[in-house]
Length: 455
Image 1 (cartoon, rainbow, N blue to C red):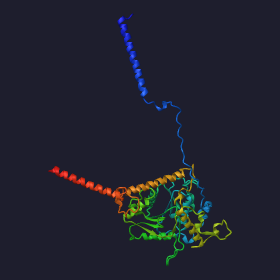
Image 2: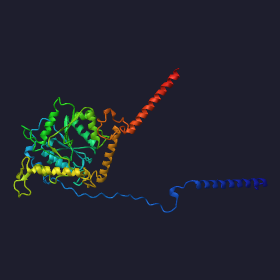
Image 3: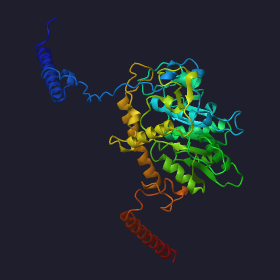
Image 4: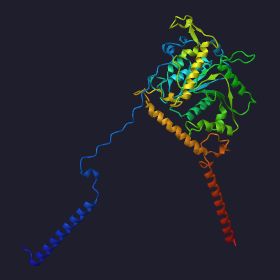
């Protein structure tokens, strides 16, 4: 059916309008898309930028591999294969009535740990009273013999427990110094020890074989330390917290004193945590007193053959590898004893004069890659150093100052975490005075306004 002429014109007009609107809409959308940012993946300004490659620090200088410093023990099958303890230093049999536990914490450097254990055993400390605390953070790896000598965290569990007959306790994870100290106290509480000793793993101890008390027989380092402990057990001794032998290279701790001040502050993980702990003890009127029991050294290296501590020598000068029945003690206070002291003194002096620092022994080993709980030696050392610096900062914030003499500055335990940082400085004191004057002025003004309002 043909459309009328009028309706045809209307149809053409409508189609024209639809075409115009469609074109306008398309142009409008195109304009919008031109202004929108184009996603990076749609841009094609050239080839994609190369992916950054990791940039590595220079590899640390490789240190020489270490050797075991107790060759005879390395060949021994049982404790009877080791030399006997010098007869003048043997611990009393039966054991004394008192409990005399000695903690020795370990994280790195087997040579130094083995040296300090041997030194205390040969100085008369009963092996069954020595507790090596394996704080390497490798869980049961040392107990199962999964680590090798070059691994910084290696510890010969079998030698310690089977040959040297000492105890080994393992921490569940790597503890900081403050946490390890609290672990000592916790263990003492669990075992109901009113006192305990603890020693640094880099501080070998030797009986003073030339020391004689008037009218008294010779006493080994252990027996002298026991005598000091017996003194502190007297009911009227007072508020004692600790006795220090050669500063705190060897310490006697009264367990309850450490508990009474809340233990070590674990927010200060390493350096300055001892200052914090000792100052808090003194603030509570506990005492820390010096004592003497023998010679205790601070070293960064190990004697190459620990048999030197046993003070045994072959009956014949021609015997290079004598059997043990052919070994005899060299005698108390002998030239061989003084050679041992000379060697230890030389090692202590070398540590104090080392321009690289006193604690280079902590990073002496660099092996162990591929073994359980492997940690990069240099990276571990850097991480520990960062934690040390963090601890110093925490101490300063806690007490508002960096130096250790808190009591001399007039502080007590109630001042912790309440002080303005740098409060001792002249500028801080002036500002505090201005703030007080301003506050007083504001208070007077508020009081005057309240009086006016009440009229």
